[in-house]
Length: 462
Ligand code: SF4
Image (tube, rainbow, N blue to C red):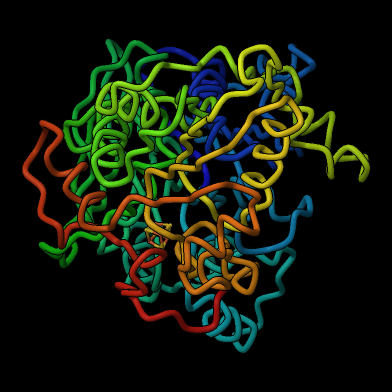
């Protein structure tokens, strides 16, 4: 899962707007960030590790990125190691001409494609699946760049929302199942492509459309052109985007994400009431809207003052020091003793993957004097690894719901909770579909991490 943005402007330099857009998309990845621009003659780039503000902490750096067209990327470490060569956008050269690629998603046939490139003599500097896409384009002998990209897209399997900067054009593409988001927006004098509509809001751009599965667009200062490609009517949008990744103010399929999450919380309150609780506390920030829906439906007292999340603790502060890494949850959250002492608490959170965060949170409530803790989760048990953009296959043996065979009593025991209850898969889907917006069917979603029904059978992950 990463954040991508591209802007083609009629007359203004785009670096500052790309920076703002990446700032809005920061929640999609904090491992590294990069911006590349083109001024009609040459490219300008700045890439670095850490959050976007850290990469551009020297304010003058942005002004050096000249040009009216550009793309940017926030990286969340998925395929490939966290080394400098994997920072995106990634550079390629096709028939002597430079291009840059920014990718959100994860391919599942990376290794096969990488071997194909190596056989053709390509020497890789990076280890990511995006590097393989750039290599395949570089090796293409197609008569035009657009045809080279189209030919390469037909070889890719897995999830991809792509932005490719080639001179003053940006090529945008979505995989045939549309697993990851990518939308088009329009400002007074520019076109913008972004992972989420929240980036458009910050730039004052109007939403034009969400790209369809398999759609390819070429965007430049003069307009938007669609490239013909065998499109499918099928879509398999990642349902976990609605639970955790999409920012609550973003709009997806005509639905404000926070409203979808509130609906999940309402369903959860009906399915998993916690009538014995004195107060209901949602875990900030990701549990907030699901928690509000739960509180509204259950009629329980809102205990939001019981927990505080400090936003000042950044990864940059925590990650270099192992001892602090182990204390991430304790540094991020503070439980207020007098709000919880002697009380029965129900905590509402979005998901449990390995269980480490939930366990530490429960421990914080216990230390603060809570009498008993009930955990309510507005997504189903996370049992199967994701191969399409969040690398949970790297920790597949650690997924608590799978280890405990979905036995909620066992899960509660390990977490130290009095009870644990998850939202059912059917209710999750209903909560999304029934939120007002464009018509959606239950078949329109990837639910593999909850159901094991992989829309594309996983091969060797990249
Ligand atoms: S497996 Fe889960 S996280 Fe991955 S794309 Fe499917 S729904 Fe999303």
